[in-house]
Image (cartoon, rainbow, N blue to C red; front, side, top):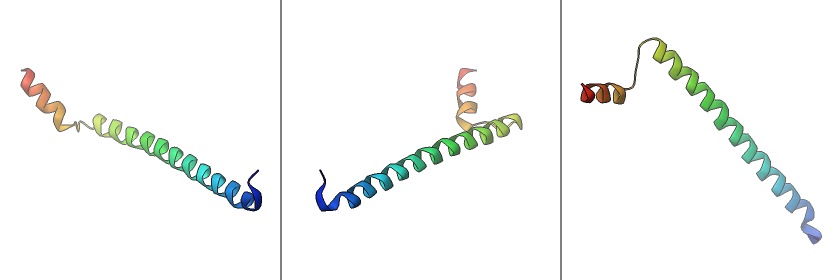
Length: 59
């Protein structure tokens, strides 16, 4: 089906798929890590500036 270049084509698709999967995993793990960091900051009483501005404008 791919002729003489079958090995190259299949390897290229494999490397591309593996790269995309690694990037997806990396983003998911980093998102989880960032959520933990934000929760820790929130517990320490450090909040986003946008939350303070919103609270001040509602008062």
